[in-house]
Image 1: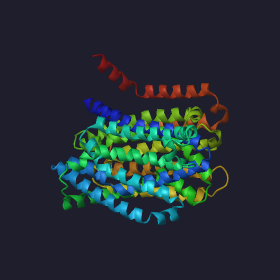
Image 2: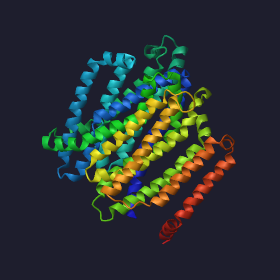
Image 3: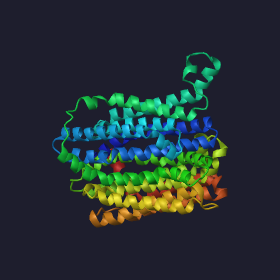
Image 4: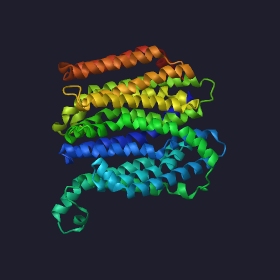
Length: 492
């Protein structure tokens, strides 16, 4: 049981480092909605952030996961750190030079202001340079330091956003000739959002600079080739994931959906991100755990147990968010003009739940060094996303526009989940408790649909509480023996 305690402890700390930024993201969402009442501006911000996520994946080119793989398998860990750091340093520097040279062309191609393009380039550069230092903290099991730096980053971002959007205009209005007037520009809200991100990323890199000054800067070509062979398939998988998670905003823009609709979709999409809190925190804690315990005799049974309890906790979070989505929107999207897009929330929550289950099921191809298969699965998911978006976005009626994007997302993650399970049982059999997992998942989907899509029941919180209570009782009934065993052990 100490094995699970250690996993829980690491997941909790990494969870804080992940949940805190997401909480900040939730705070920023109503801030943006309030100070960007024009939904078109919100749409523009979301599109730029989508590009940020996409290029973050490209700039890391699978080196982060490769770093963990070889850090755990190689005897000379300093060599792994140095080689990975040198590789990312020079590739990032090359990107910076080329992107700045062609920023005007990029602005023309994307129809985004060259000023915003410049901010984006620098944010991408600073974030890429922090990848290996952060990975090193995780590999060396320093979750508290990792969490502190991550939390400082998002705190700076939040405070600067609040200052620029909420306080700076008032300070200038009160004293037009004062110091603050020198940094105030009218109708520059989007620019301030990216300036805040840039300053936060710069601070983070400054804190992590010692990771660059304390390494030997030795570059092992043989090791690097092995890391690239392992990591490049993960790059393609990462690109596919970026397509599934964020490319919908870009596709909506390319297919001429009004920016105002994209803005409403992006704002309501945030409510569905509660599941991402749980999934991302779990992934940060579980990835090093999977690698470090792969050689254990009962590894497969351990992975099966972990997956079952992920589904149990995830099912409850999923159902809870969907049941109370209409209360959450009052806080997270405090502008009724955005609420037309609320219908996507259950789909986004369930899609992220499917992705979390896929994360568990995908352990097999990482452990047997078959990352190419993971890339193929992700590419299939991305193909589903692109195909369904292409056909659904132009449709008129309830299944078109951004609702089509939400349908595409859940279909993509669902297909990846099923394919990974089928292939995993062939190459690396894990004794999942399929019956219980399917029961929890099926009940969650059924209760979510009842509580959200039936108009009368959507407003009846007595029924909603009843559904939650019934679901909890079902969990207790199904896991009673395990729960009683834990209680008896603690009593001793």
